[in-house]
Image 1 (cartoon, rainbow, N blue to C red):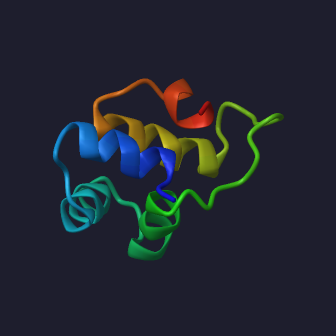
Image 2 (image 1 turned 135 degrees about the vertical axis):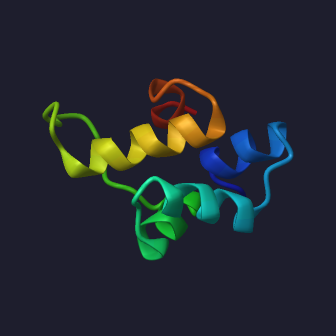
Amino acid sequence: MSSRVQELAANISMTFDEFIGEMRKRGCSEATATKLWNGIYDDFESFSENDVHLSNLRKAADVLRVKTGSLLTR
C-alpha cells in the first residue's frame, strides 16, 4: 500500500531518491523526508501556524507541486 506522498510522486514520475534529494535541499532531514514518503506523519487536526511538522508538510507539498491540504486528505 502506498502513501499519499508516494501516489502524488508517481503522478509526476518522481522517485524516492528524487523526493529525498529535493526535501534535503529544503532543509529537511533524510529521516523526516523518509517518514513523509512512507506516510508516517502526525495527525494534523490541531496545529499552529509555526508548527515544525506543518513546515515539513509544506516543503513536501512544494516538492510535489501540490497544495498542503492534498497531503492531509485521502
